[in-house]
Image (cartoon, rainbow, N blue to C red; front, side, top):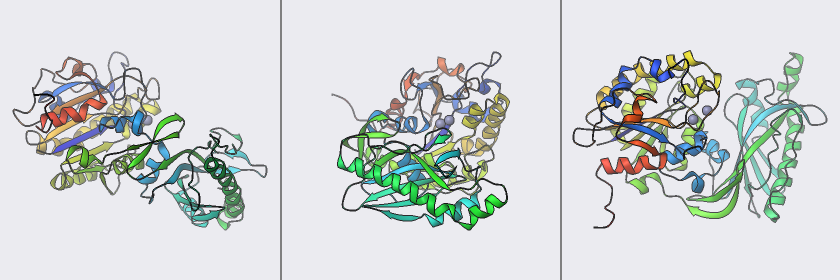
Length: 428
Ligand code: ZN
Ligand code: ZN
């Protein structure tokens, strides 16, 4: 028995004129998983906690995010395929436009296009500042990842964001503790930011952009410094991606569960979470993590992966985007699109493999943001493996009367292990 684990990002919602988007959508294939499965709702982190996509995915895979969350920078870097080594620091970064006094005029450099961003990124790919190597990798659009590696001194993630999250003066970073490492990394970071501006502002690409009345990409602003030690994570978040120093060993997914695992996703964050847990991640052509993603290709990649791996995690992003956009009809339509695309996958696996269908958090269209509302979950397995309940529809309301009841995200993997007959007895 293999596991097909599908996460529909942000699918959970609230009632809009009496019904949720899941209730409104026609989705016979998704409903089949609920009808032949065991159903419930899940608080991915805990009741009342509003989950981020990163922390909730960790919890769903059985890793307590309060213990294992290292901040977004490292996850983004791993997701983008950047090589990260023991002791490296990673930050998420943006091309921005600043004036001569380092006042931010635009946080995304006028949403600089792929081609210009890539060309500029080449110029700042590797810079040596004092004791540190700074690497910049362009990811998508105006976005990128910075990694910092210490030579004689370890780089520290304990410094503040240079991204002020608003227009106005750039936020020069400050160390967050009294350590020499934090002080030196923070100083080097500021020096890097100035150096990058000197390099970028004279590039032909930017001169051309100014001539064309486009905003130049003449600065990089960064946030969410986080550190990586292979097999080990820094424990205990203080705030916004800064982490305290007690070390915890992180067990690879395969070691923990005895299941070889792979991720099929478009968004770098999800591939990053998967790689962080030691899963493989496949690249799928046309997987964009938007509503235009190529679902058919993702389904094909998932089918192929199920022949090679015990556990296949398929991530679908679009519903979360529709939720953030406040687009109820778009969300319903995307659910219907997912349902059509999943038809062959559900049909070929129902009754033979374990299918888990759930989400990482709710993204109600009325809030245009994540909420603490529990998410739907249905688990369907071969005959005799699960205690099928009376639920027939996969939606927030119907699922509440199912046999799983209301569970935590951290309960999902143990439940799967139990169904697969891999759970160890407690006591005699
Ligand atoms: Zn999410
Ligand atoms: Zn979201």
